Image (cartoon, rainbow, N blue to C red):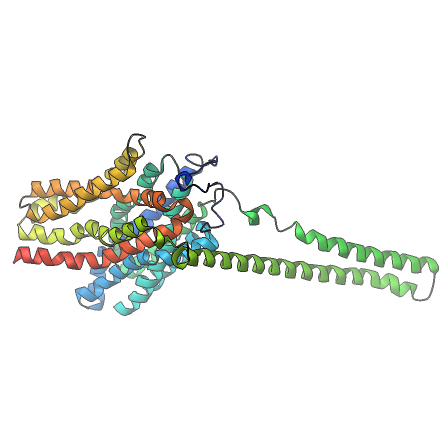
Length: 469
């Protein structure tokens, strides 16, 4: 019921225990599947990596617009929040247009947001162009990148998701260096303009998101049906030619006029035929689009509000509540570590090798290692998921209690490694709802993560302030 037109190549049985692929497609776990990993990897670099590097632009905006830090910081927060919060609505686009078209449109919108932001006259202008427009485009490109990796992998899902999401770590380093260089050489406005051009590569990544098998639209070339019309038109032309020939043989009056009008009449016939073919193709395209939109909206509506709603799955509802608090556990250290470093006078050691860099580097390796471990036949992905969750939460509570750089470095390494479980989120989501519901379900999960990223750090700041007092 919830499957989009791209969900072909999978055969499901009625038994929920057999919700995994029964007839594997040749490209599953190999072939073009690794191109999906590469595409998703670059999407994470261009979207998540650039968002993690927005601190560079935040400094430029403070100097340019002379607004408060709190108001200026909302530009970056809004962009990150919108990218995740719009997840449920992106599921509607995926059900209607498919992952490839959704990602390409998202890339164009994201690029447009960056370019328009280069002409910002105040911070409030950036709220619309960068926070909303670029953020919404990022969400349209991000969700298909995650969903398509899940569709192309069965046996190595955790490893594939882990490899693709390492693009966030690499992107954080690459985009930070790139934006610093561009701002220093060309100014922040030109830097955003250039970054908008770089973001067009999201369209290339989207073009790589080839469906597992072409739908009925792809199997029916446009040139097949219009051949019916040329047959009738050809017969009419032939009839005209035969009629003219008969008159010529009869030698009746008007024979020369008939011969002179035949080419003109044939041209009119061909012109009328072309118009008929064009009109037919337009009507056919509009009809297909209408059917696709209706089906996509119906599937999206039933998935959220219908009798077969995802919210009737109690385990999935519990998973949503967990996601409301989960993402903040990864964001909190990046925001509050500088305050802890200043509190315990560790700035000199932190300047040599920043604690946030330890988290980012170990986070990359954590995603890959946890993906490999979770794919082992003797290991349950849920056990890995829950153990790393517990380790991450425990590390967050211990973090303010460490008074030395070495102790903080160890805890930061644990935070970076255990937070690698985020690469397992699409895997456990698919285990809960099935591959046919993954787009809608994961859209809800990343929406909850967006709320967590917006609200978590301010609440977490209260214990840190109490500790400092």
